[in-house]
Length: 166
Image 1: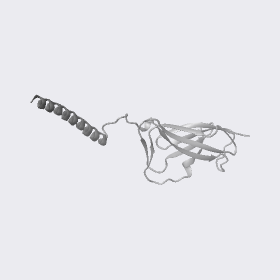
Image 2 (image 1 turned 30 degrees about the horizontal axis):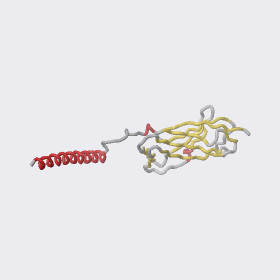
Image 3 (image 1 turned 180 degrees about the vertical axis):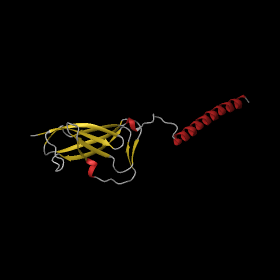
Image 4 (image 1 turned 60 degrees about the horizontal axis):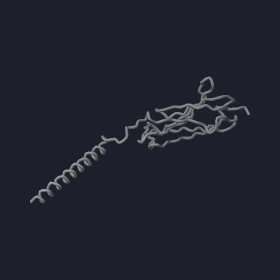
């Protein structure tokens, strides 16, 4: 009789532990599906970093300028940027007096549709532009220029480039 009582007690403890374990799984699973439980803090667009650079710092008068615009996600969560059109990136060139000389989007049309960019955790998304410094309408003379890279509706960042006369 004692043995049966002891077995019953052990079995009840095991059943209790299994029940608690299963309840925890059910609650956690439901919470995860509902988006309540987050393992990592929720990341936002403000956590992103934007970098703008050119492939060189100094160019000759007739050289093409390659402009890189990168969105970096240093977080452990995917971050999604939403746009009201296909217009997601832009760049603007300013002279030393801060006069706007050229804007890439000024003569472009963009599809009117909702678009998005998904930046995976610990990853980046990059866009590259080529500007012809001998552009027939906007030639760049020897001087230092500021190039502003823009993630439309979110960020902008500047870099400088020098056009040399030789």
